[in-house]
Length: 96
Image (cartoon, rainbow, N blue to C red):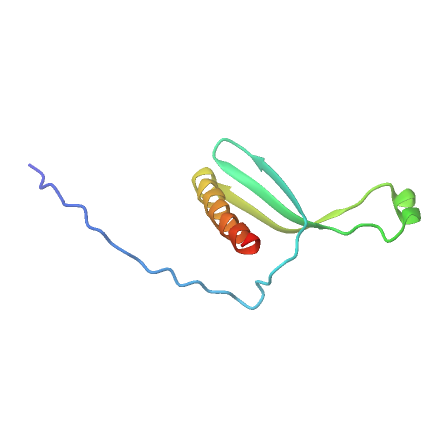
């Protein structure tokens, strides 16, 4: 008969590495799509036209992608919960 192995709790420290070429990006637009097991998130910057004439000329505004992410559905849930918690703390801090 096989010996029953006891579950062992192993903890691993995550060391976050931030390479120089991984810069913060300002974004003001987001697009989210999904399939049965992943979410696809594109963060973009939309730069408004500098004049009404420019808008009339082009009749469109580009959203320039700055970052594209693929998240598992489980990780997406964790991100949503984390952002909800942190945004709640943020609101409490600014509203006193």
